[in-house]
Image 1 (cartoon, rainbow, N blue to C red):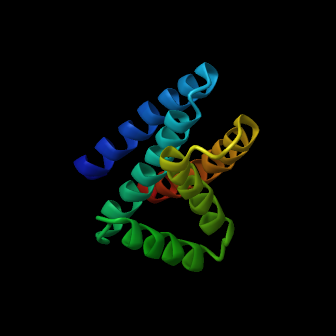
Image 2 (image 1 turned 90 degrees about the vertical axis):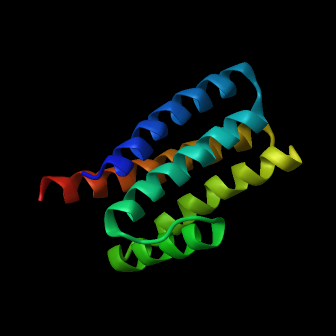
Length: 124
């Protein structure tokens, strides 16, 4: 696995842990931002491995669309969109704790699916 991919994947774990801690503390804006960060980092790890550009929101959405299409799994687009809602909430602060918990949970589904795909590619 490429060094940069490994760096991204390590950051996923850091952000997930921080997101859980912030959620426990009740800082919904920071919790959501950490889960967004984790989602982008796992996606960047995948893109790095594939040699795809991934520097910006638009490219990340394009990349997740490609992965979703290639794998015939539309839930990947949903999961990344949920993460994006958490990112928006960092600036707007309109989500409730229940909503942040739900969106964070769905973001973790996305993160785990991408990690699973990466693990399969590494084992090949």
